[in-house]
Image 1 (cartoon, rainbow, N blue to C red):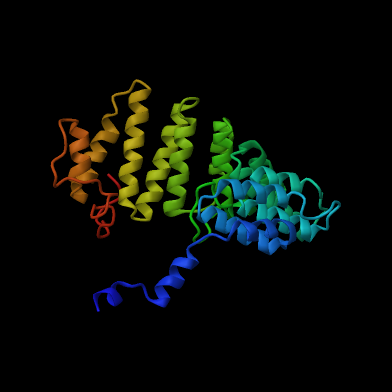
Image 2 (cartoon, rainbow, N blue to C red):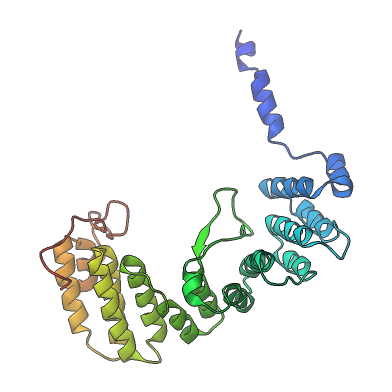
Length: 306
């Protein structure tokens, strides 16, 4: 009876079998005879089992799966599967086989071109693709939600959505053009929490070149955070303002006082401790942004931001 109880059931055996990658013979057949969809599934399986050799063989096959010249649909499908197979450079090569005209084909091509450049960390190319996608209209870019290509080590799951305007600012900054990144952020028309974040980041990007403007932007950011009652974000912005003022040779007294008043209103002992800059925090202290912290508090409607 004990032996029977310990033996795996048929369902358990089936589950174990399902967790195994395909046999080598089947994989070699897939490389030769598999459709684009078959090759995509092979890429997903190879990534799931960490089979880098198989991934590379699949990438090589995907570069020649269609004879050239290809149709637009074939090019886009081929490039998309190469991105699934964690080969953004391969996707870029395939996309280069077809130059679309205007219209929907151009938009699809540019979205995939951005995905490939983003996944390859080719920030200048990614920025160009985004600007071309909206013909330079940053207000239109702010309305776009983009899907990131899966990263080299990403686990299967829900697609990652990013805002077009914020992504362009990220690429410009990563490419080394901090002023262009700030201009992109400042072109946004959102209000409240989103505007506060963008204004705050633009201030950090501009601080070295134009401290006075950066300080003014932080004041605007604080107004937006207060209007949205985003008090945890307001604390973060005041800390940025304090840091930038100290870096510029100031005493940081005003943002320090405002931080002290705001954190007192929020009962944010963690930030109060940081302002005192003494010792290590006790176990009862935590950041308001940490789980269980005070970033989400009851509305403070009795007065504007201190």
